[in-house]
Length: 169
Image 1 (cartoon, helix red, strand yellow):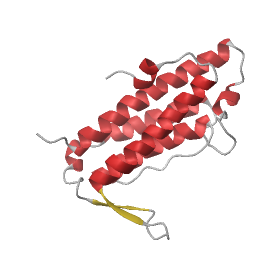
Image 2 (cartoon, helix red, strand yellow):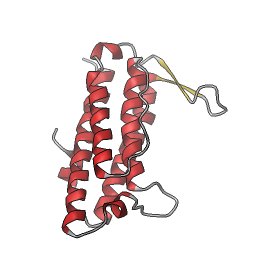
Image 3 (cartoon, rainbow, N blue to C red):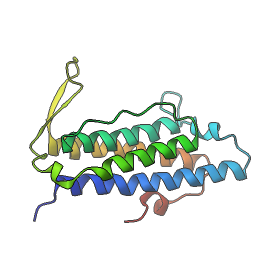
C-alpha cells in the first residue's frame, strides 16, 4: 500500500501546527509570569539577518496552507500580515488548520505527478512534480520554520522540550 499525498502532508501539518500553537501558549505564559513585554519575544531572533519569531510562525502557516492547496488543486489562501500579538498568531494558526482541514483527501489524488509551478511568470519560476514539491521542498521548508520558532522560544528561556515540539501523534 502506498502512502497518499494527503496522508503525507495534511496530518503532518496539523500535528505540527497544533504543537506550534501550544508552544506559543507557553511562550505567552512565560512572558506574563516574568513580566516580559510579549513583543520582545515575538520579535526575537538568533541573529540580526534572520526573521523574528512572529515571521517564523507566519511562514510555517504559509507553507502548510500553500503546499496543501497546490497539491489539492485549490487556491492558495492569502492572510493579512499584521500578526503582531500572540493572539494574532494563534488566529493565523487556527485559520490555517481550518483551511487544510477542509480539504478533501480526494482532491490530492494524482497530485504526486501533478506539476507545481512556483513563482509563475517571474525569473525565478520553477516547475516541479508534486511528490518532489512535498518531500524535497514543502515539508523541509515547513519544518525549518517550526523548528526555528521552537529554537527561538527555547533560547529565550521558555520551558519547552521535544514533547512540546512534537505535540500529539
